[in-house]
Amino acid sequence: MSDLLRLFETRRSVAPHLMIGPGPTPEERDRLLKIASRIPDHGKLAPWRFIVFEGDARVKAGHIISDRYKALHPDATDDMVKVEGNRLARAPLVIAVVSKSAPHVKIPQWEQELSAGAVCTALTFAANAMGFVTAWLTEWFAYDREVLTRFGLSESERIAGFIHVGRASEAPVDRPRPVLEDIVSHFAPKD
Image (tube, rainbow, N blue to C red; front, side, top):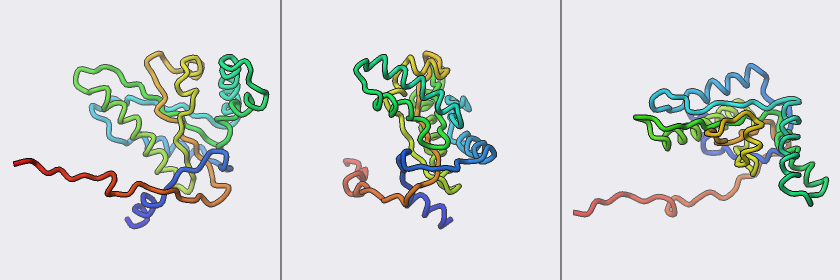
């Protein structure tokens, strides 16, 4: 248990441009997806799904992103377009968590969306526990309907996060964390 607590106490995100390979094997990737699928899910709706970007698919997805970026920014330089086209190729593996929440007679959509967020958290911690580093990002294209459509999302689906998975090219440095006194209050009912 102390190893698990140590992971929770020390894990941190690593920027994808600082990630190197090798990424997870297909077996490790599938294990990550199975673990992430075990998160709390009121009503057993599975209001989320995964899109896996690995190998050449990361580059092909990058073409979609860079094409859209050029359309939105006709004055963009070639270097700027190249950066955008490389967004999903920086890490060896990127897993998009797609939120597919919908109105339900019993389960509020908010709970379904939180469940998709829990999937992202589970993916990051499971990958960290397997010795990989991660970054949970969205970036501008996660909110661009044309890109989402070309990635295969329906009109009602949204990206909860792109989970970048790889190995650290250098030891990650921790960042300042919130001071408990600033973020914790204790309920005291008024008599």
